[in-house]
Image 1 (cartoon, rainbow, N blue to C red):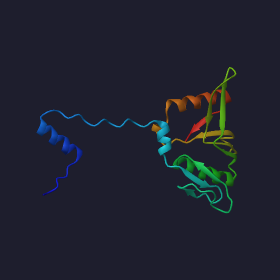
Image 2 (tube, helix red, strand yellow; image 1 turned 180 degrees about the vertical axis):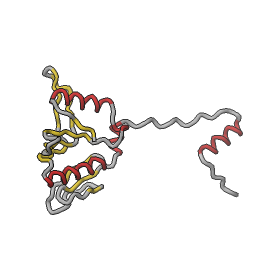
Image 3 (tube, rainbow, N blue to C red; image 1 turned 90 degrees about the vertical axis):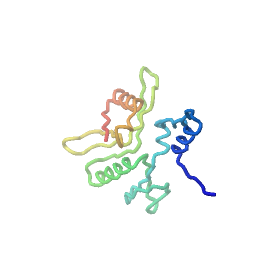
Image 4 (tube, rainbow, N blue to C red; image 1 turned 135 degrees about the vertical axis):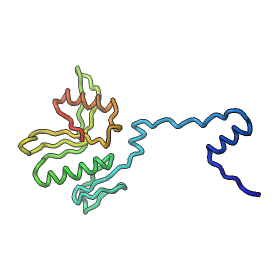
Length: 162
């Protein structure tokens, strides 16, 4: 006795030929939401002393050096660049994950959390800089754009997309 192996498409085509009736296709899997996408994303932890990015969660890397969580590889790479710029003296007061409460007419509408905020020390770009790292256009949804715009208006800041 031989064993017959078929793919799902081949099995459907075979059942169609044998029965003569159309076979209903398996229901397609719905597209994932942004929240599920965040949960499935690969998170990174960056040691702020040696700037090593770790794919697994760690408590410390270099003798009690602080470790910063990043939601994506692009964000981890940008953090490493900003730490190097801070060490070189081109920026100062680097903050990770700063929160901006958006209050309109005395009502808290939302809280916008940027990826980074710092003060630029260069002659052409002096002042407060707020950055949000996006890996690609598909990571920008309408709710995020609305929160970002609301934070820009209520706090008089300009959010730079990197």
